[in-house]
Length: 187
Image 1 (cartoon, rainbow, N blue to C red):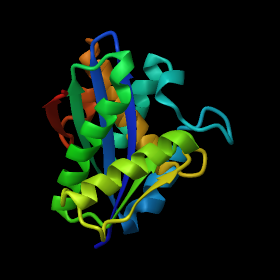
Image 2 (cartoon, one colour; image 1 turned 45 degrees about the vertical axis):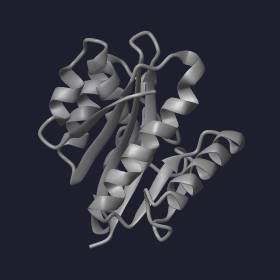
Image 3 (spheres, rainbow, N blue to C red; image 1 turned 60 degrees about the vertical axis):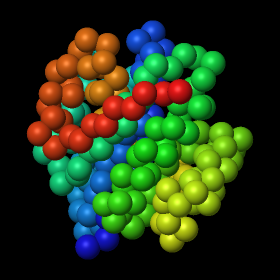
């Protein structure tokens, strides 16, 4: 089976936590997951975004994702401050891509942030490849969340973990039976 991965981030600068979350989806299950994520749209044509949802909507969305055929994986990096977010992203991305590549995923899609920041990701990924962290054969690209609802699931996982880091564990608790977390110390 082909394994697709979609990745998003969340940051809690108050608590010094950077989260890079992924959802691993079997290619045959992607349409089902897309449809489920579209069902979470607050209005047609408006994507689900964790930070825009109220607690009840977040709980309902986490329950939806927990019932889907997805494997959430997250790297939680700390400490981070507002000035070092890109460094934190690179370190978390390296750890996440290493884990995913070791597991044999077939393609990875990062949420597109903007052209300049996407180029930083591309440069970091090239450095990972040159150091042998990930294979040159693993496709890693960017997608816009408005065009790919599978990214919404990664956004939800990242948000749930950040909420738990801030003292609200209910969302992460719903995902816990299928969630894999790795903690790293950021340098």
